[in-house]
Image 1 (cartoon, rainbow, N blue to C red):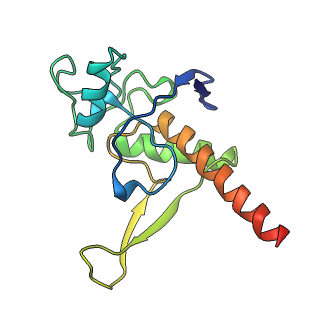
Image 2: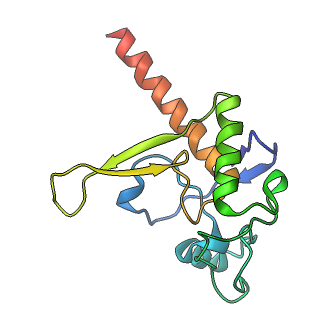
Length: 154
């Protein structure tokens, strides 16, 4: 089973794994084996390709997870940009094509009932490339549309 990345039109394989992180919420999660230890182990076990998308480290030996200030590679239109610039550029493309937008998230943590604010660029995670973000956002958008349809029917 595959999905199509609407930015670069490439097919992305879909796999089902037996691990999730509660902080990710619900829905599909994009794996980035070169930059997440769990995804790296999964890819190694099943002999899947591991493509470096943030320069640094030696992905033949382990995942490179210190991606916050890295430079993108193997990312088509985002090559050569630092991670923050890439987040801003892909957010602009997603907003222009009406398939994503910049948001502010509020989360409660450690059982403290105070509002904690974190600004994100369309929820891009440190180990997630902008291309992978697109697929996740499309799934979230579809889920929101389905909720709206259900509310209208009521």
